[in-house]
Image (cartoon, protein in one colour):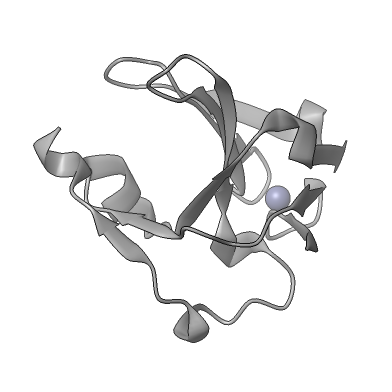
Length: 115
Ligand SMILES: [Zn+2]
């Protein structure tokens, strides 16, 4: 299913093809601080329509993941990274998809704090 999403102020907008499965809630220091519910897609399923120039990057720890947040509103609506097998993935902040009510989501817990 195709979803539209982006940051809070609207500078960053994208579309993504995803069934929203699985949904992940991770307790690592970064995911917990930002309250993410994530799903992961191949780059071919993701199209950034606008806002590349508004993105600021944050990296930490292994620096494998480009955490990209809007320099205007501060919202990280997606990230670019690699799966453990080395394939490129886009992490979608599901809370940033249009029409999603976070109360309707039932994510799986991922113990990133222990990794
Ligand atoms: Zn923004």
